[in-house]
Length: 207
Image (cartoon, rainbow, N blue to C red):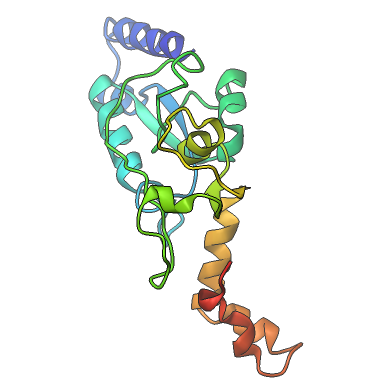
């Protein structure tokens, strides 16, 4: 799909180059690539002015610029990325998105950055290595590489878990944390509960 769009854009640029028109105007009318992305700082996020920015956004913008295109970055539901590409609503996606196991699902431009997976635990946890997760509960983001690793267990080093909890709506998680940090959650809870601060002490919960 993206190859067809690129081809049309290249032909259009070539043909307009043969006409005696205002070249500066034509330069600003470069074909547009619609890039789908979600909220995942520091790779993709909206800055304080609501403008998409981040590592992936800047890399994609510069790469397509060198190819003669401009980029329109749109926020998408990451769990529906494949459907959005197939329907043509977006032209491509870019993110910390593993190629392994998905080579036949998309047309890939190739790897561009190394992304390593880590397991985050409480500092007083007795989990020090991957095998220590045996029989434990683990939360991962749905439709991501970590979910696939523990669901498929294609490597004998991957431990058997008690429960694998797949979480979606990452943007909601970020937003709720932002509200907790800026005091919004406290203001809302204190309208309904005495001692509202104790309801926000989620960092010490052992889930």
